[in-house]
Length: 490
Image (cartoon, rainbow, N blue to C red; front, top):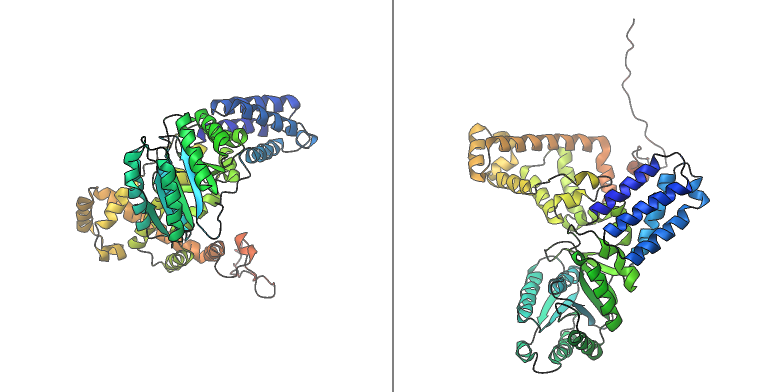
């Protein structure tokens, strides 16, 4: 989302970093460029003025002007101000005991409200919660069926120890528009049903409109008064820019929101809504939708977003994504296989699928520090993974476990079966051999201890993580043994 903004910030700080000492005029010139970049990113005008004013005031302090590395000081100040602009954020949902905790989800049509309700249910189910999702959007008859299908998909997902229940009253869909308060009745009945089933959470998918109007607000106020929800969340489309901010402001005036869910966060939109919502409405962004899949809902962290904007990556989110797909035990088992040189193409295929479940490759690489800007014009083809998977699946189980069996005849058969060329099969085999060889070498160099420490397995001294030698019990460090070399006589 923030590629263009990150590139502009990078240019500004690169110019400042090239100076041994900066002056007040340098700071003001840099902040004028920052101001232009924020306006181009569709950030609210009041937010831009407030942000640039605060950064300039702090940057003109003696600490920056007299610093030996003024560029780094400026980055730190801008980072802190970005975090303050978007946060602090408590992304966790308030939970009451006994349940159900009622979460009222509202928004305009087309913002992804119904899909977000299902994503929220999947998020809670993964954390072991029992959830009921009620179809109170009677404005669109298809919305009830859509939500029912999505809830069925979430319930069928094996991950998570929770349960997802669906509640709807189809007869109320026919009454809508004739009987006043049909949606209110559905919500009241849903609360009773969730209480009877002893659900932890009840998510209400309320009606939307193409634009904000009085009938919509009147219905939402009626629902709000009837069920007294514990959380009121607004779903807004990040691609609508300032319209999203204006919608959030109007909804907040009518309903007193508790937070915002920003959808299409993975799009190529300029990011103005993400930087403006908190300042304009006073309500934080709690979640962001980062894809079309039902597990593509993430907690919003202002620190991580600010880090991405400034080109510092987001390693924490990357690690969390990896941990969701691979358990610590699986990682340790794979490391031991790699250390013994026993990794097979079947293991490689499983690792490949885990990476694919984490998201698009360009998005994952963009979380690494300093990589985001380099990927701007790079065309990463995720379909290459499909071809690699097809090649491996065209092999027999024996061939996947022992690549030495792959003679020319077998490679031609695999190429025909996978719809690829013999050269691509050979390239995959060569790449796999190289990865296996390097993995074994790295493991023998002590990398295993570092990986175990990062995975939280075993008692490993911090010196290992820093690249030093591990300490023996008692604090002594083992001295490396070197072979005595004979000096040549000249």
